[in-house]
Length: 54
Image (cartoon, rainbow, N blue to C red):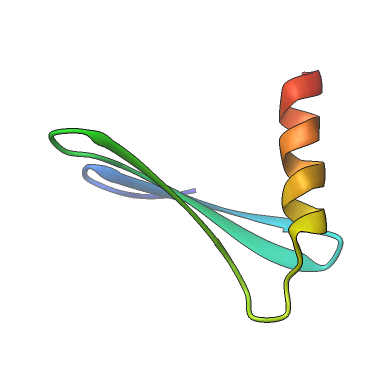
């Protein structure tokens, strides 16, 4: 995890895809999800399902 003051970033590798989850806390909480150009939503779906099952 990368931490830069009010910004945290975590890179997940799911099915050979990289998904970046970025959380910024300023006045409000902002969550950004970024995937590479070749990425599909399959990796994100697996990542979210794993988080829900825990």
